[in-house]
Amino acid sequence: MIKRRLYQGTGPGPITPDGCAVDYYATLTANGEPELIHAAIAPGASILELGAGAGRVTHPLLALGHEVVAVDESSEMLAHITGAETVTSSIQALVLPRTFDLVLLMSFVIETADDDLRAAFLRTCRRHVAADGCVILQRKPPEWYDTVQPFERATGDGRTVRMTDFSRPGPGLLEATTEYSIGDRHWTHTFVSRRLDDDYLERGLDQAGLTISEFLGGDRGWVRAVPR
Image 1: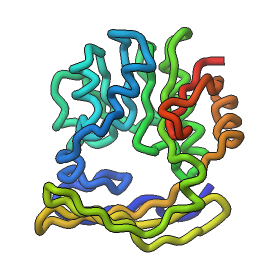
Image 2 (image 1 turned 90 degrees about the vertical axis):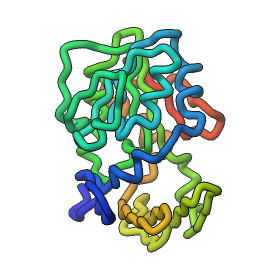
Image 3 (image 1 turned 30 degrees about the vertical axis):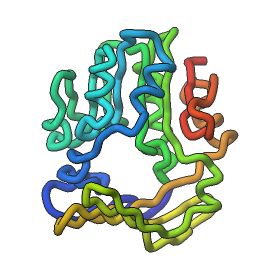
Image 4 (image 1 turned 45 degrees about the vertical axis):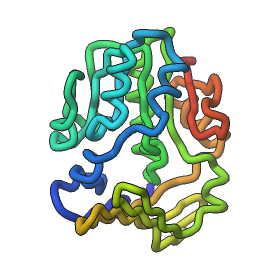
């Protein structure tokens, strides 16, 4: 287990325990994720979205005809979600009296550098997935850790994203800071993440009672797992 603070955030408005800026996340929109998820499950499938944030993917999934229960430990994030049942809880502590056709854990949450926490996340996924259901996880393709460099990207809506301050505090680990700007508002999010090679991820899934069934989207960043 990494003996360091894994996430820190700064900037205007509420900052969640994992360092995310609520006001910034509330401005984000989906970028193809809902369609990828929708194509991998049955029409109308029930979804448990873990770490739902401000509903960037929740709202499009609702529009595609799915019943979604959105979970986040930040009530400020969940306040931006409409049309879905919301549950304020950490992922690792969640216990609901039902299972779902799909348990969704995206936004690279699975790449926490805390191995015990990752194991708890996967147990939550297994606890809430139906026997004939699936879990969809999003990770960065393992090769990303070999090639990533500091960058700055500006968009046409006045938004700028920078990734800076790279370091490698241990084998398979990456520490970096992402800076976000919209006009004169600026936020930072410092994180430590772990590279999840296929074998490493498969071992963690196996310990939780899950197994990889396929990769979605072509770059092995989206992983579909099923109960063992």
